[in-house]
Length: 111
Length: 113
Image (cartoon, rainbow over all chains, first blue to last red; front, top):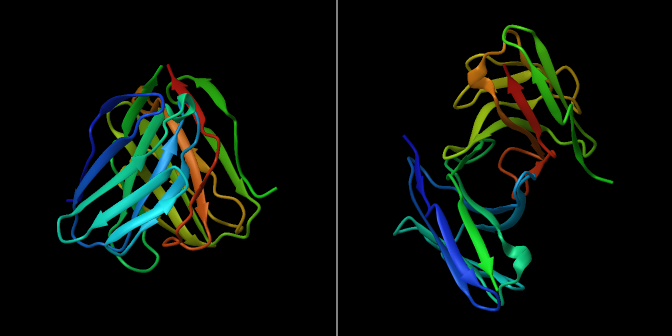
């Protein structure tokens, strides 16, 4: 089966930096996605990695190491509005195939 | 405005009473999908559709049906709902299944008594 692991919960302070890790063991790999989901709302797309390395988008960055089956999402200059769940998802096969989601990491930003 | 809409947003029903949750997208996307989200289990895919008249089972299809008669609509049908189908349901669409960005609807919170 496909397995995607993330920490269940994390807490960080406003203005700080937080790293949310994701490890995956899947039968194939064709890209990794990060989504943000505020409580009771729909997930929204944050980032996509298919090659090793760091992708930066403003305060958010995402890193991928395919050999280690590992990714992280880095959030800088944390704001209270960043309190949300962060979902890691893997596209296992190439072409028109669905994503497999991890269970999500609930991040609480405190003052 | 590009969007995915779902109706109803909230629904309370009783065991065995057939219901349909509608999903519509205005982006001419080929790929559409239904997920359910439960505490501690994350997002799990119920059914997906690659294009009109092409549907396939996801990870948790039991107790659900779908149809894709038109490109824009992808309704989720619960023929005989049971309490274990109480959940938060999301419809999603993308240009193709492997597209970088998948757009999610606002969600439908269903309670089956």
